[in-house]
Length: 119
Image (cartoon, rainbow, N blue to C red; front, top):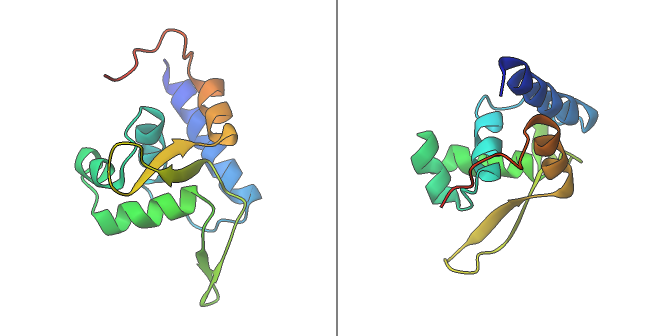
């Protein structure tokens, strides 16, 4: 992987947010997106690996799921949906997984056939 690959991924996230009118993004959005793509699928685990607070993780996940953002004092939904949540099969709470759009963005940046999957 090269810096150009990472820059392309960040540009893809920024472009998706711009197209969805998601407003200003938290600086942790790309990091959390990459952790989810790497297999960290629970909010408390994301907080541990990123060093962000659980509250920040919740806000970032809401952004990645296309949930509300503030515009003129109101919450507005967006089409910025790179992550979805579903009931976690082994833990309490939700499991975070990439949507097809999120998977496409990751696949366009990384050669997943050579990536080592987390255990």
